[in-house]
Length: 385
Ligand SMILES: [Zn+2]
Image (tube, rainbow, N blue to C red; front, side, top):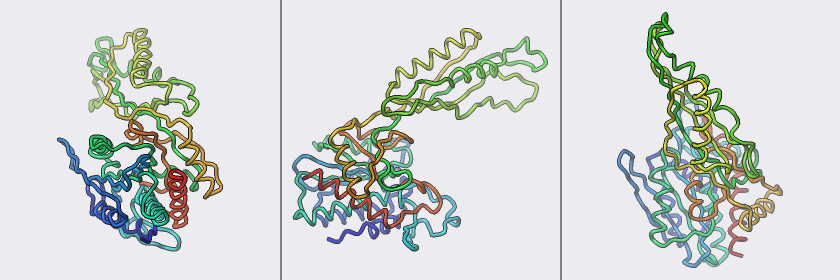
């Protein structure tokens, strides 16, 4: 079967699969994979307050090891479509570049993996020496509740076992081969609430302004959380909003709030991090007699690192063989579905170059699609060698 990553990527870009819509993208992958001999399953997940989302699991081979490729066909909205130089869902090629929403994040990555797998199967008589699987969700870019997290559980309940995973998110910074992501920081959201006593601004002695206390606490909580670790940059707490909501000029408010987010490394767990922040707040608040509370939002984004080992070495060698570059192992950036996959098997993230993701005129150079396909093929060949 012919396996042209550009043709597959163009086809995929043309489906309007803005989360939670699928637009036909998974049907397309299903028929492509079925023709190549994959057993393909679909699973629609739902829960109250969210839109149902379609997902796909495909596997060829029944033996272990099972190398799984994970990705998402959903995309972020195009924004103002007239500001694009090429319509975002047309899959147009101009010169040596494919334009469109999802070209790099991550329909392009999926196209490269599918092409690599089909090429590998062509050459190995249609069967891997083990199993190749694809876990493709339609719910990554939005709330990510009816996607990979449930698809993994669904697959595990069916007895599926994954040995190693490549997640095809655009991991590279400048050029294909510069970065493999081997872990992610955790993310935790909190709200700091300081209470005072409301009063007339001309009689401050009869009131207690919570903004003063909030200032003190904000300053204290911005102190460094650590110095970083072997695989991670220092953790960071960033305030994202300070809110009093006071429409009146002569009123001291009764309450002031500040929202913050922490991106934390493997020196912390969610529990230890909360304790550290609460202790700091407590010390400063006691000194200034500030009345406060911290409300934590539940988080499913724990920190993790994929320890260097044979799988990491294999991926690095495949990248080096195709590009001549030795990729850096990074744990930077935001969270991804790797946070769910890591509970089932070691996961590395490697895909296209992320520079235009989520932007107007998102695009992938055709040579990058070709290079990424060659790298995925080398990963598969080495894995089953
Ligand atoms: Zn993505």
